Length: 431
Length: 98
Image (cartoon, rainbow over all chains, first blue to last red):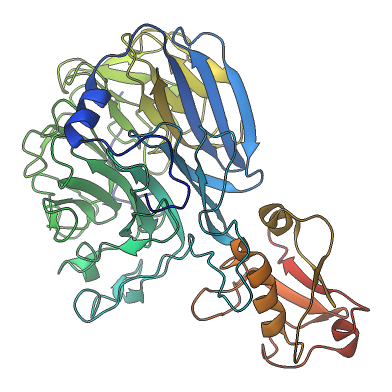
């Protein structure tokens, strides 16, 4: 049965203590990320949940797991991600409706954590230095004005207001540099290990800014992809504005939504306004992008300049997460969700779908996954792949399970059953 | 000496147990208490009030001597019992949800 698409909207070193890994070149980072990893190796899975963070570790067999946590117990951890240049450096977004945003950083692989710049008492007369959680929009004449408002749910203009950090993307080459995607949608960058963050205001300053509007999950910038072959080229995605690309390191941006068709907006092929849920790429082929849109799974082979639908035989092409196999650029994974009104798998069966042809032809992967009475969701940042020779696929559910397949999706096993609702999953492949 | 009671999440964040004790020179107001608190524990910056505008976060309340001071001027003198340390200044996360 294929679900009928509805028309409703979306749910949604300068850091004082330099970490061990010195900056490396983009080329080295690319090789490090794309090469298969075998031999003595291990994986570290970073799990953000509604009530804290967890770290799951195993050797290369990925059969026996050590579970650490909860870290930051009671707080929402929207995302954690390790630096490709120094795996011991991990950034985490800790957030709360009561107390706001906290940024956490580890320099020892998640054993200990610090709030960058907030760990030391100031000297008498000094102003507190705890500004790692200050995300101030750039409203200068040159960049921000008059883009101080965006479209609200009711079509009126609404001020941009910082709410939380959704996604963290460390630089490929420098452990102290990272990007943050925030709600209300904007991209920020730190170059001092998270002590301070500055907006790359060219994105929000794009002339389409006032037309952006929030999905049901908020107006969040949730995807940041750095091109391993050219770190000045960065892709981002926003719900519900669409996908954007910079080719000059974040100074200027352009919408890359040609070919997207969204029945739920007044102009289905508009330049912006599409509810993109997630974009993924294989690091060896950065011109090829795969997108899980609100409805539709899409593909681009020209860096997002144009897209075509590859939903093919999926039972429903609504969903949130999408990822690409580490070594097979045409092998892609999605978790179909019934609809935008019913955020759970069809027929109570949790099924990952895999294509090995770059889309259109999909096969269900079910071995080891619950095939009855399962009504969880898999959120947009909750799927990841490792770099091991036999590529591991991971995803977490709103029911608190984190599943791993050590054989590219053929069979699955839960690493943990009963965590709080999982918001994000990332994996580090360690040697 | 001013006594301050923080909600559990902020105590964890600041890595303190029990009450916080602060020395404040000059008038004891909500602003001077929060200034001193953030100076002692920079990690608390932004968690109770906005970094820039100093506006109280929506789900944060301030109590002194069993009275809600959340909507009072930040520069109004707090009760003598707070200034004398006889009663604690309380930062409370608003009760919401189950």
